Amino acid sequence: MNRFFKISTFFMVIALLLLVFPVNSKRYHRRNSRNYPGKRVKKKRNPAINKVKKVLKASEPIKKTIPIDFETQLGKAYAKVQRTTREKHSYLSTVEEKKIVIVMPSYNNEKWYQQNLDSVLGQNYENFRVIYKDDISKDRTADLVVEYLAQHPRGDKVLFIKNEQKMLAMANIYYAIHNHCEDEELVVIVDGDDFLAHENVLKQLNYVYSKQDVWLTFGNNLCLSNLSTCSWSMPVPKNIIQKNQFRRWPHGQTHLRTFYSWLFKKIDEADLRHKGEFYKMTYDVAMLLPMIEMAGERHQFIPNVLYLYNDLNNINDHKKNGKLQHSLNKLIRSKKPYFRLPKNQMPSFMVKK
Figure 1: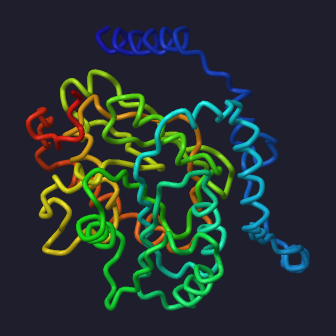
Figure 2 (figure 1 turned 180 degrees about the horizontal axis):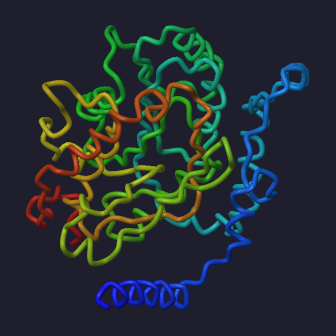
């Protein structure tokens, strides 16, 4: 009796399981059948077909990136700036011209020097001069620039300096300003392979500095490779300015960068150096952050495109060593910020009577 009870219980459990989890025997056998179409079967490779595929692939034309023609792209950039700049510049002549000095660090720019200097010396402005520093270029940049200046009617506006040893951009800018710039001069940084966007750039800068209490400006630039503006070009939010958190703001002060000479001279030289040497790259962050911190709200973002950035040049910092560029940017932003300058530390010509 006990044995019969166990057997009957066993079959009852099996019956209940079949009711809860029914088995589709037909589906089960189909899935495990060799001829079942849903089953994945490894196909045998046909060596003859593989050979044909290789031949066809080899006969396909190789896709090559078409090099961008520099002069064509530069012409398109100038045309785009003219189309997008609708404002008339007649009002810019209503203010007295301030002293402006354009500092131009240059290295291996024989491909771009002529258009670069044309954009600078072709400015519709009189009270300006240029400091051009050739950093021992390995090509013919120095000779070509000297020849160009000798033939240009405004060549006497340019102080040409050929370094005796390689210094890189940060050191070139530092010594150019400290040794050759007056405190009241407005400094405009133009790299030797880039271009001012139109002939009234200096007039527009002069108007901004004359009509507002501004010590520093930055703005918008057009990249030659794709004729687009920088996505990170934007004004600094008010809360960042009030809390002096420029180093925490992820965006930067892009071209065109301008400032008073006296403001640059307030930067501690040690903050422009890393391991005893001037920054090899990311110099713009190293010098702009201290100045905008000292200026506070006395800076201006200019949304109009005033600068054409030549990202076609293969020796741009982000192309040479992007990893080092990012690490130096992080290092600079981790440093202690400068305090906002009070009025008693401003030069006398800046104090409004």
